[in-house]
Image 1: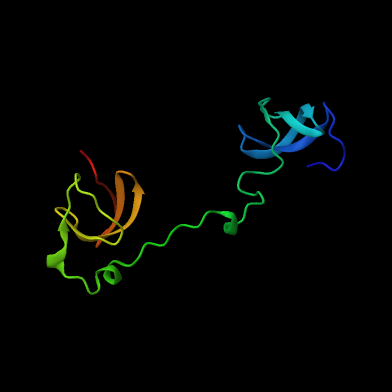
Image 2: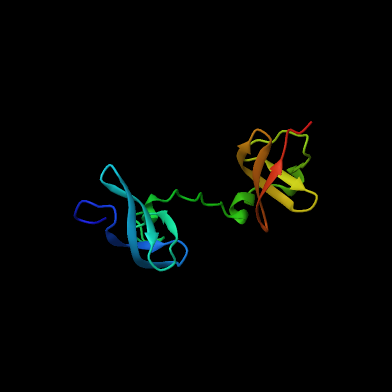
Length: 135
């Protein structure tokens, strides 16, 4: 953002959304002391003012939402009997921690309920979201 009060008609560097470069633009509108609209002096495209190229903002890695860690399949199966696994069916109701056997994916453990009708299950080849409680 410029250090002086922005003025309509003044030239300023801005990210051009058409050229995909930082180029000289002319200020077209100012609202509440902030530049709101500019036009590129190269391609004549009109767009919102962008002081920096995309991806160079103040957002840091720590401000991103944390991705939940998927438990290790071998750890989840430890101490469980494969014969005790309940057969998976879309019409059945499953709870977190339940040991199931899917006809395609094999044995798995329910790790979360995603929605009223969806569960997340960890199988040997990775996590899957499955339907449950379907009429």
